[in-house]
Image (tube, rainbow, N blue to C red; front, side):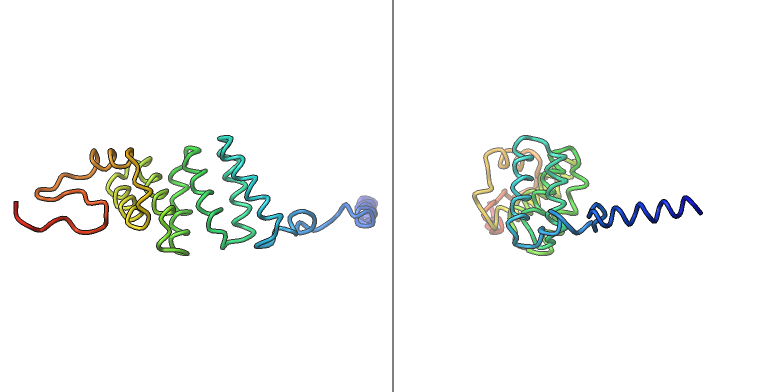
Length: 172
């Protein structure tokens, strides 16, 4: 009985001093979609990524997405951070969610391709790379072209056509 009374008194003291606040108060309460605080948190994630602290970057981008599930750049960067941090399998759902929200997002397609490539899923990676390049030709780097040449299954009478049109159907 004495212990319960001490606990009640302690809770009353903590409550009176403001030490016992809800989890939504303080800095987290300001993390509303479009708020400067949320944008600041996103920039902190970018800084962590640029300093190659991929674990911290992933955690920060996750907090941004939890606060604003529509923050597409944070969702994609969360996946990129996971992939670069050695967890490409965990990154896949982030890119897939981004593509559900924007089915034509070239960077989501490209990064999904990167994660698939890291997992050794070359055919699926090639398909994502091609879709990405169809939407944004600036994504086609010499490294990607080389990868596509090396990994794409060989087909008779067909060529790699990165411009999105089907290969020529004229006989050779």
